[in-house]
Image (cartoon, rainbow, N blue to C red; front, side, top):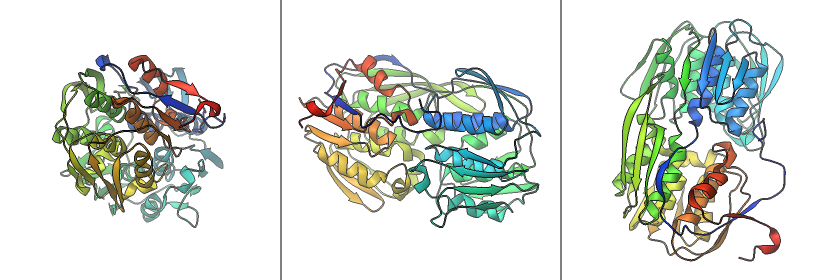
Amino acid sequence: MSMNGQAPADGVSYRLLRPLSRPLTGSFSVPGDKSLSHRALMLAAMGRGVSKVRGLLDSWDVRSTYSVLRELGAGFSGSWNELQIQGWGENRHVGPLVLDCGNSGTTMRLLAGVLAAGQGEYELVGDASLSRRPMQRIVQPLRHMGAVISCSANGTAPLSIESQPRLCPINWAMPIASAQVKSCILLAGAQSAGETTVSGDAGSRDHTERLLEALGVHAQRCGGKAVSLCGPAQWDGFSMSIPGDLSSAAYLATLALLVPDSDITINGVGLNPTRLGFFRLIKRMGADVTWQERGLELGEPFGDMRVRFSALRGIDVVPEEVPGCIDELIVLAVLAASADGETSVSGAGELRRKESNRITATVGELRRLGVDICEREDGWTVKGPTAWKSGRVDTHGDHRLEMSLAVAALACSSPRETVIENAVWSGVSWPGFWECLSSWCDTGTVWAHNDCLNL
């Protein structure tokens, strides 16, 4: 694995996939939640004393967060699966430092809020993909708090930050619902004197405020549309086991829903209500999916989920529903392609600003596999069911598109073959994704080379 979030530099890689020949059955698990892994590491680094975090996602993005926190003075010991973190307390390294965030938008945006207060000069950089993603959305509120921060003329990375001893609390209305922007402001607000409020949340994931509340920070949530906290705040070291990632569970669930006679249980998965948007939508499509909470980890619910093969129908996904399923919309399009009727997604323009232009890329690649899908400015329309066909598709360097295309290739019963080009990016969020597919599905998925790809 690349330690700074880069894909392995071994040229273009291909995967040749054939549909599953048998149902998916039994009990499964998925890697630790990516969003929680980032946040647990950052809060542990900011805390007083030693924290112990178990089950961290060992992905390129989370490794990027780990690497920059270590450069900033956090101490790490133990194994990755049971990591001990010594918070930097008053001894954060002040630089000047250049911190490489790799491909991770979460690392860069949340870290900017952490570094806005205190002492030090920092430059936050990233790979080519991250350097195209918008950063003005965090620069503006941080400047209103008194931070000295700048980005490129295009509103992108690199970010230059000169930490300030004192920040002012603000009341900030977000024009676009974003858990990363909200978290950036809250982490800066926890280091300012007074009440910081973020509104315009519109149902984005609430991991940061849940974790801060569990650590004793006075925070108040108002109907899911605003959150306030009082700073300055400090917290001691903590212990946490990271639940399984619901976004990863969505790929498994999609396979089970589309392959006849499948019946699976996904154990120990996170059940945060702000992350269940995809599963609420597929229930509306007719999916046989249930979940049962078993406990809490630092304010985060977790439990088990059961998914069984189901006949699906098309639905309309409206803008208010998008923040709760933004990471799962591509694989939802795969489900929609096999459903009866039309599925539309609107209010998802933010997909154009992810690792790829996920709207254009999703529409183009699914069309190659026979899907009747129409691009819209802020989403797409899919008409099903699809007569799937063989094809050659590309990941566009996007881990979620890569995994969604793999599910599309495996899930449909017609005899065909799918070649996925540039299939090296799943490690951003699911390390060992391809190995998991091979072991779970016994699909005959193989490495392939240029000279044998004749589709």
